[in-house]
Structure formats: C-alpha cells, structure tokens
Length: 283
Image 1 (cartoon, rainbow, N blue to C red):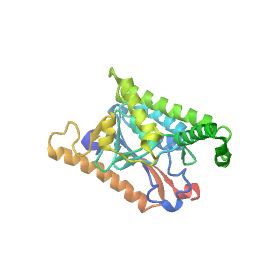
Image 2 (cartoon, rainbow, N blue to C red; image 1 turned 135 degrees about the horizontal axis):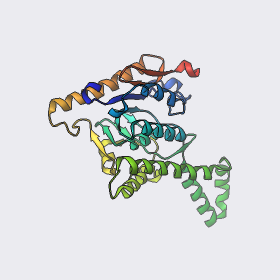
Image 3 (spheres, helix red, strand yellow; image 1 turned 135 degrees about the vertical axis):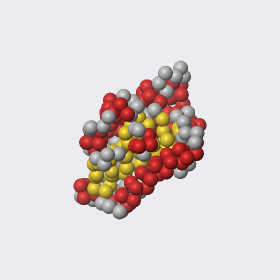
Image 4 (cartoon, one colour; image 1 turned 30 degrees about the vertical axis):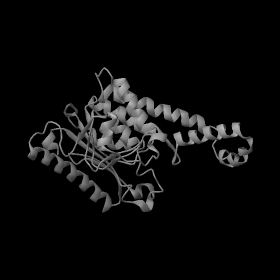
C-alpha cells in the first residue's frame, strides 16, 4: 500500500469483535491515553511530509483521549491525514475519521453515531428521559410513583455531565471539520453543523450502535472516497490494485487479532508496532 500511494501508513486496529469472551474489560479494546505511546513509536522516524493514511477499526473510547490523539496527529502531519475505514470505525472512531481530510470507505464499511455514552447509556437518551419525567410529573403528580425509582438511580451530577459531554463532542468535531475536511469552504460551518446534528442526535440515530454506510455518510456531507472507485484512479487496474491493497491490510490485521493474544495493533508500513495483548491487562 505504501509503495502504491507514497504515503505513510499506520493501522489502528482493535480486536473487540474477535475476543468477545473478554470484552467486559473494555480498556484493551477502546481508545485510551495509552494509545498515544503506540502512535509516538510508529510515527517516530517517518517522513511526515508524505502525510498519513490512517486505517481505523475501533469501537470508540474515551473522549478526552480521542481529542488528545487527534491534536497530536494534526501536529505531526499538519492535518494531511486520510482515514481509511475498511469495516467499522464507531463512536470516537468516527470522530477521528471526521478529523481527517477525507474518509475512504467501501460498500461494507460503516461509521457510527458520536453521541457520548455513560456506562453504555446514551447521554442524549438520558436527558430525553429526564425531560420526559419532568413533563409527565408536572402534568400529573401521580406519575411520581413511576419515575421516582428510575430517577433515584441517577448520579447526582449526571444531567450536567451529559450536557457538558454532548457540548464537548460537538465542539471538537465541528472544529476538526471546519479546520480540516471543509477548510477554505464558504459554507464550512453550516456543513459541519448539519453533519454533527445527524451524527450526534440520539433521537435521529435511535441507537449508539447504528451503522452508517459510506453512501449515507456522503449524503450527510462528509468527504467520502469510495474504495471501489477511488478518486484520481481512472484506470480499472489502478483502482483494483488500491482496493486489493486496502483489503489485504485489513484482513491481515483481522487474522492477526484472531490468531494471537493481541487485543489492539498500532503498526506502521515499516513494521514498527505497538501490540496490546490481553495479558497486558490481566484479561
């Protein structure tokens, strides 16, 4: 792939689909601050003027770690980053993809909603439920008996935390879209707002696990390059070679995650890698 494109290649692959028996321990699989070490190791020594093609296969993860990682990648490659999503980049993985100049996706690829989660519960959904409780109680006090045991389970500051997390995620994604993917466009802010509304509104997406196809992502307004017919490759042979290279990288990573103790792989085209194993986290 590097020989074809002349660009730096880094894969960021999680094995959450291959290791369901230990998925209850999320940290080995999700985006977290320890990933920065892996990226530092794989970026060291690269000719950063060549830009970066970043393969993403992740269920998402910590918002603060995601923001910090994107800031680091932007600083290293001056924003010259292309996301390649051969299968799934969900939640915070979608946010990283939005921080790139464009996203390469195939017919089998999916992004996901970016609504923040608290213990697996959507922040938007929790706020909607709280608003519904207030409305129903104000209209009929007899519903207090129904809502009291539900609201009693809420952490005292959970509503404020939800509001801040939603605002935070929207703020950074808009900043990345306006300053990267839509940089220089007159309608950059409006385009970013439309995409953020569709990706972050729980009432629209219905589920944090919702899969957003390449065509739907493009229809939202994201800069999507289709893997089956990549831009700038008019010859069928060149387009086919590019697709074969992308899928070969993808399947190699999936096989490695399936046949080894690895939970996460961060590796560049020169073979420099950071491998997180299940034993590293006592899984």
